[in-house]
Amino acid sequence: MKILSSLEIKYVVEELQSLLDSKVDQIYQPNSEELILALHKTNVGKKLLRIVPGTCLYIASKKSPSPKEQLNLCKYLRKRLLNTRLKSIEQKNMERIIEFNFEFKDSKFILIVEFFSKGNIIVCDNEYNIISALKFQTWKDRSIKTKVKYEYPPAKKSFSNLNEFKELINSSNKESIVKTLAMTLNLGGMYAEELCFRSKIDKNKKSVNENEIKIIYNELEKLYSEKINPNLLSKNPVPIKLHSLGEGTPFSTYNEALDSYYSQFITEAEEEKKVDPKLNKYQEIIKDQESQFKEIEDSIQENRLKGEYIYNNYMELKEILDTFKKDRKSLPKTIKIENKTIVLEMK
Image (cartoon, rainbow, N blue to C red; front, side):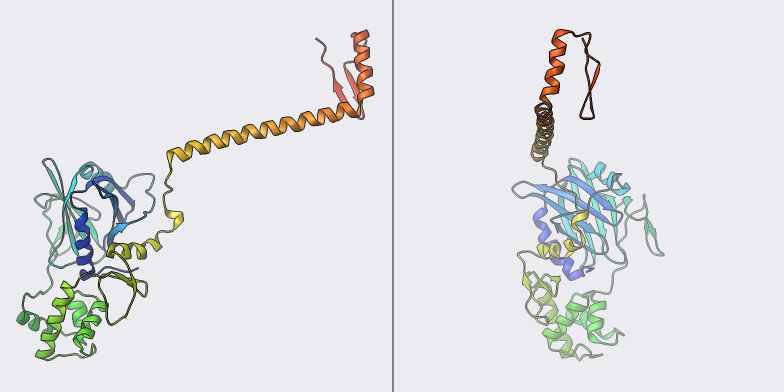
């Protein structure tokens, strides 16, 4: 399954700005690795924001069913975030980290989603004190546990100008320029190859000269500021046109492209069936009518058989009735006609 790169997260976050000021209507946690926020905004309607830490986030058209018993994080978030409003969505320092800010009257909460490594979801108060998390973890330089201030992981080497970019590229010990761009810049292989293609530089070169570094730097700036042009390339959702891979299937938004890709991993059998109350009512009425119709059919069949029996044994039955009219006491309690026993009840 595709894991979003930092560049792809940038474009997702840009589109998710349309959700700002949405109210949190409901929260779902289908499993221990996934969270879904049902957001509602006036004149926009309900949107499902699917978050799979370590993998992806996007506006989803369908979701996996929730378990019968709520998972711990879901219970906690429902107490804290229901009816709050989403005030901001921000990618931190072009890293694979997104910060959501929610507010309700005097309450403020920060939801931090980490997409590096196996991912995590951390809930903080407005001063970044951790109050809950999907996974509690401890490393040498940081911890994810309650009553501890959240600290962002050590940042990778970054650059803010051409000279710093040169130093970053020249200090790399990777065996090719494409790997340097993919790993040092956290671009991912596909976009690193695209950058080499646009720069007209052999991606397998180990070292590049000053002029080539300047070209790569300029093309990188264009890559980060390029207008969104979402499409599917070889079933891979991308937010911009990749000249190195050719034409793909276009989409109106990058979120739609992501939804088209990730929804294939949510099978129909896993989806919750939406029950229309009116449809359910009509189905019950039809069921009752079918039951009544069956009873009427059975009754018609039974009476038809009775009629045929009387017709075929008319003389014997007439003799019994005549005897009954003359003397009820002399009539036997049971009578056999064609191996069938008729029980007479005398009142």
